[in-house]
Image 1 (cartoon, rainbow, N blue to C red):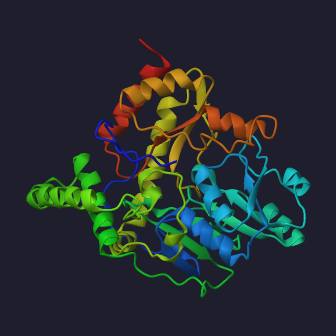
Image 2 (cartoon, rainbow, N blue to C red):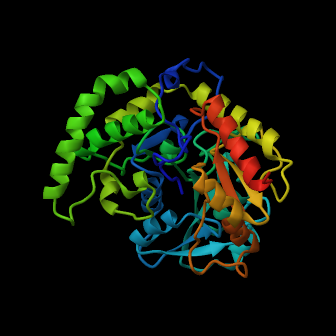
Length: 397
C-alpha cells in the first residue's frame, strides 16, 4: 500500500509537488512509454477504480471468478467483489512471474479474467500470459499500479493485456489519480463525470499541503498561509456539521485505505491532477527514479541479512520503489518506523486464504519485503538520510 507521509516522516514517501516537476519537458523518444500513450485511456481517481472498470469492460459478472496473484494488495479485492465475482489466487515464482501451470489448475467455467502485476515497475514478460488467456478465453488485465512507465523486449506496458490499470499518484505529485487504458479495446462504455467542487478543491489543496510539509514551494506556502488557515477553520466547522455517514470528498485510496466505494467508478480524476499529469516532465520522472534506485542499490546491496528483491534494474523499468528482501524484517522495520523513515510493505496483509502452503514465495514476500522510496522528488540529502538510517538499523553501531 502507498502510505501518505505524516509530519514525523523526514522524507516524502511519494512524489511531492515542486517547481522542478514541470521541466524540462521530454522530447520524442527521450522517455519510456507510459500508460497514457495507449490508444484508449480514461483518467480516474485510483488504480482500484481502474481495476473495477477493467473488470466491468471485460464482462466479469455475478458468479464469475478472477485469477489474482498470491502476492497482492487487499485493495484489489473490493473491485472483484463489487462485480459479484470471487478471487482465486495463483502462485508466483521466485522472480515474481506468474505461475501459469498453477493458474491452469485453477481454471473452471467461472474464470473470466487473469490479473498480472508488474511488481515495483519491473515489467513482466506477458507473452506466455497472453497465450494462456487466448487459449482459455480469458481477459488479461495488466496491473500497472507499480509501473506507469516501462517496456520489455520492445513492447510497452499495457499493450499486451486487454486492459491495463495504473496508479498515477504513485508516479506523479498527486493526492488522487489512476488510469484505465487499452490498446485493444475502445472504452466507449466508460463515461465519467466530475465528483464535485469539494473533491476538486481537496485534491488540489491536499497536494499543496503535502508539498509544504516537506519544505517544497516555500514562497507559495508563505503566500497561501492566511488562506490555508481560513480553509482549516471552515473545514473543521463543516466537518462538525456533516452527517457521519456522508461520503468522503476523496476516495479511500488517497489516504491509504483498502476500501472500495463503487460511486467513484463514474468519476474522473480532478482537473488539477489531470493538469499535473499532462505538464509534468516524463523524462525527469523516469531518469531520476532510475538514478535514485541505482544509488540505493549501490549503497545497500551488500548489507548483511538482506538483498535487493531483483538482481538488476532492466533498461525498460521505471521503478516505483526500491524493494529489499530481509531475512528478519521485524526489528529493522520497527526501528525505521520509529525514526520516521518512509517504508512500505506491499501485500501485507494478504487475503486470509493465502499462506505459505498455497504460495511460498508470495507469503515470504509479504512478510519479508520492505521498500524504500526512489521517486523523482527526493533530494540528495533525503536520499542520503534514508541510506544512513537503513544502514544503522541493519548494522547497529
